[in-house]
Length: 183
Length: 286
Image 1 (cartoon, rainbow over the protein chains, first blue to last red):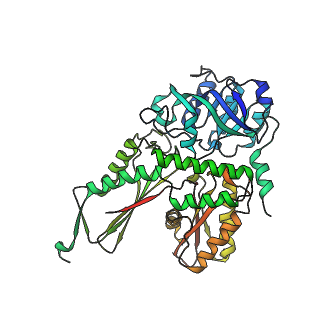
Image 2 (cartoon, one colour):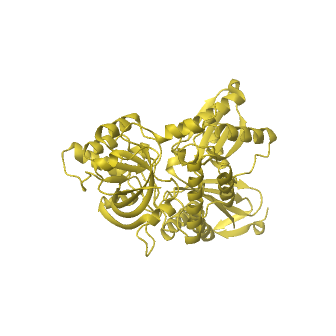
Image 3 (cartoon, chains in turn blue, yellow):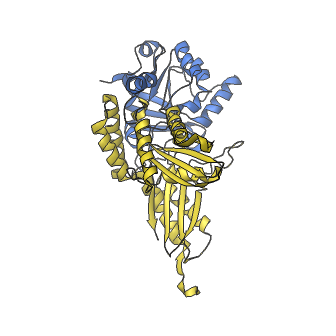
């Protein structure tokens, strides 16, 4: 059974999540990927305000396809998270509580999750048509010039993800591979 | 040859075919890959892995039935053309006709535009997913075959090339390929298709690896020794334990496809190019 999670996320909710848990997210999540992260972190370093308050929030690493007529969004699966590793710790320091993506994170990012009490969730990579069904609304927040890389506020219902890294230093990818590896 | 022996093909037909293939390839996962995923649901030992495989199959069904892209990364448009030497193209520039097909297909199909014009400094999106990466081969006959293979960035980033020396032998190739898949881990959206190029030159071997991905999942290289190596590598890769989406399991790869070419006496280039489980590609003959 999936754990129901509502946004914004509290420290109590985060503390209850363990690597391997299935979660079902309802509420608001923000999209951001490479180019948007570069801009967000530049703003933080300059001491300027961000286009959205990241405290307690979830960032979804996604660049969706354009929404066909009558739909809130096109295909919307996760992109490879590792590319956001250079930026993620700074956002967690600002209060970001969760990231959704796919693929492994670097050690500094895992350390930052323990330190700032944040989690990393994976959605199924390459399942953009299926995942889009959980997205009920999409609204532009910033950086329209980035096209598919613009920041959007998504309203999701029952968005499915798996906890990969928790605040206790566990890593689902490492544990899973250890279990099925044939040496 | 007299001019009358040439078959005339308007480049407008090329544009139209490319437009249609861009949309279709992104929405319709190849049936051989679907069949391999269905078999994997039966053989996968990990319960989590089985559940993921089922959801992937559900995703691919939705994409096909609703005509939406299976993955939001609708990729850079790789376009491979086999141009019969008895074809006379009329009505314009072939490269521009292909790019126009990409432009139209990515707009009409609600596909993502994923290219930047300047790779390093400005990185501004070109806005229409052009330019396509185009390879044209001249072949005998008067057919014109076009294959569109949208290539996503996540799996592409996990590619690697090594200039191995002849002494490295079969073991050298095996350990290089297996090591790349291990390093890639969950990143290229397993279960993956592994394209391997062996031989040629530094530049040629990468194209061989990419072309290997155009072969259907489940096909074998016609050369028996390379076919055996494909089977052996698939077995080795599926012992790594990465599994569907990297959460652990037996189904890390659906196929290993190898293409090879003659090479210099001093060299043994090897390239690895990965595709995710969507592995889109589709062809048409004009």
